[in-house]
Amino acid sequence: MLDKMKQVYQLQKQAREMQKALRDTEIEAQGRRGWVTVVVNGELHVESVTLAEEALAAAHKRDLERELEETFREALQKAQAIAAEKSKEMMKAMNIDLPGL
Image 1 (tube, rainbow, N blue to C red):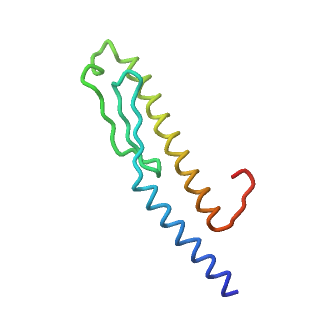
Image 2: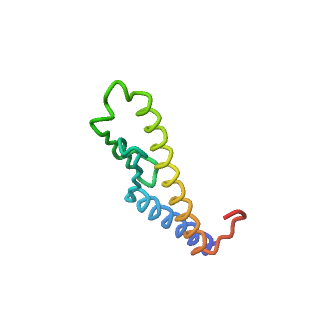
Image 3: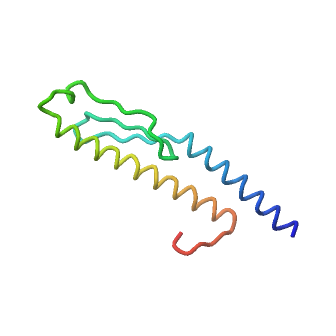
């Protein structure tokens, strides 16, 4: 019983460490026109959004909206991939074998 409790404690400790590492990881994505830059952390929280001055013209409204969507999607996909890889590494280090990982 004590061994199981130690394993649970270790798992919780590693999960906290991984969460901190994800929080400290910044992922940047830039739009194809260069108008939009989005930075998210590994917890999928938006850290910053930067817009180029020329993107703010009324004539570019629809293009800017599209670029914002694409750039946010890319940043979140990159962050999810990093989080999945870190989770996979943690599971492997702990000899946990889950199907599909």
